[in-house]
Amino acid sequence: MQLALFIIFGLLAVAGAVNFLLQRHPINSALSLVVVMMSLAVLYWSLGAEFLAAAQVIVYSGAIMVLFVFVVMLLNAGEEERTHGSRAAYIAGFPGAAAIFCLLSFVFLTNGKAFGSTDLTSHLTHAVNNIAEISQVLFKDLLLPFEVTSILILVAILGAVVLARKEQ
Amino acid sequence: MSHLTDFQTFVLLSILKIVVVLVITLTAVAYTVLLERKVLGRMQNRWGPSRVGPFGLLQPLADGIKLFLKEDLMPMASERPLFIIAPIVALTCALVSIAVVPFGAVKHIDGVDMFAISDINIGLLVILGITSIGVYGIALSGWSSNNKFALLGSLRATSQVISYELALGLSLVGVVLRSGSLRLRDIVATQSTHGLLSWNIFGGFQIVAFFIYLMAAYAETNRAPFDLPEAESELVAGYHTEYSSMKFAMFFMAEYANMITVACVATLLFFGGPSSPLGNLLPADFGGPILSAIFPVLWFVAKVFAFLLLYIWVRATLPRFRYDQLMSFGWKFLLPVAILNIIATSLVLALKG
Amino acid sequence: MSATVPISAYLVLAAVLFSIGVASFLIKRNIITIFMSIELMLNAVNLTFVAFAHMWHQITGQIFVFFVMVVAAAEAAVGLAIIIAIFRTRQTLNVDQINLLKN
Image 1: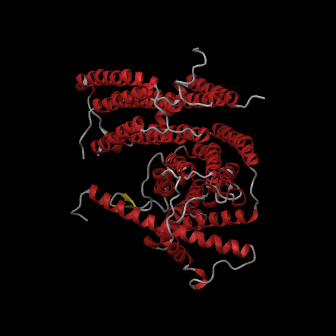
Image 2: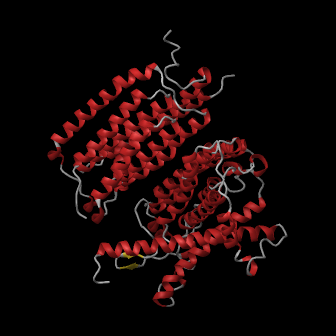
Image 3: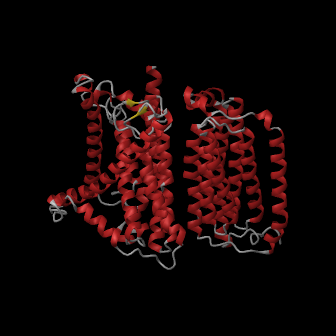
């Protein structure tokens, strides 16, 4: 079950990301990013983080990406054109990204034994209440950071309103 | 079923449940359309559809055949793949959220819950998440049809849905605080002890939250009086102006399926879901094992039906809002009131507990 | 049924997504898409957090993801407002043409 979920949604996530890279039109890129985020939500759930899975769908795909799509629609952004700046980026971009990937996966795979493997069955049978656990930590141990982020959100809202408002 | 393993039984019963629920939902969608036309007709002093079948009961069938046989137009300037995907997204999201709704009492057969497709501990969040994904259907349909009316309609719809989602989500927090769980079965269970008196709307003093939910939900489903995205008098037909045939039918079905989902959620959260309003006046095993399994389903359907009638009544009664009124109503009235409701509920709960 | 997945598989998946994010961040010329590739990288990092949280049976990793999501939401709101403001003054979304400070 876990393996099947990982293979299906991992492949879906990679396919979405590759499509994100290849598409020229911003709205197609945005939609393939939504696919990536939804499949990541399923992977979170398969790692026993069901609250995060829901939050991922609601916050990322339901709010942030809708905002992106909305802005693309509002500004009527067309297909991006190739410039000489992008040629330099191609030369630096692909090898750099490939190098990062090689480094990361080398580290992960060499230490693979130490990481162990996942076990969804314990989560399913013991019915661990993930939400209760999270709220315990969030509202007791980490209350101050939580409140600080709420102020951050408030500041972000005000900033967005000020920035996007038409000047008189 | 002894020769099947647990997993096989689970899969088979799940498929059976999904098929049954899907067929019932789609039929309900078709007949909600008929109900709306009939009731609207009566409210406006006319008959409504009455030609096809007795009392016009076969009208949905005729409508379906008509829509199915019409030519499927594809506008030249449209963004082809997105144009096709948009109605599919809309309909899928509208139908999927019914999967977490428990529509009957807890009844296990072979360890499988018979009256809910899946009973998961984040049921409420799943419904909210799927609703928020449904925006893409509307946004993409307007953008991809490359028509200014469609684009305006979908921009309106997107901003409306994003704005009212906040009030909708916050209005549900009071209920979640009272039940202490996001599992829909638990939320129902906290309301089923004393019948009508323990429903969240009466016994839980969530009546303010209920009205916020109701208004936000009307906006969320783009229904009157918040039907600006498809305001006929301004925008031709809004985001589905360019759609025809089955693709139009999918949007149409999605709208009504969303209505049904919203009615189901309101029933579950504020009106005790499948629990009886009589509470312990009726004994739990009233009428034998089979009838006592059917009664909760009947209660549930009756409550949902009442909500659908309310939807239609509101549509027949209220005129459409203006767009700035809609936005200021959502942000300046519903949102603060929802936050006040959360504060009040949590204070009361803290003082009591 | 009971086949398990090694944690390192999740981490490699996260590495793939992160590298694609880096590549598209460098290659894309549309400022909105560049912004989206940042979100992709954040998502890849979130996956590693959740995987490690599962590995150590610690909830703190998930809390971290929660905070990342909150910050990403704030960042998206402000960033998109900035993009709209830029589009108002420059009438373009191409990063090569947004070079007012350069010359």
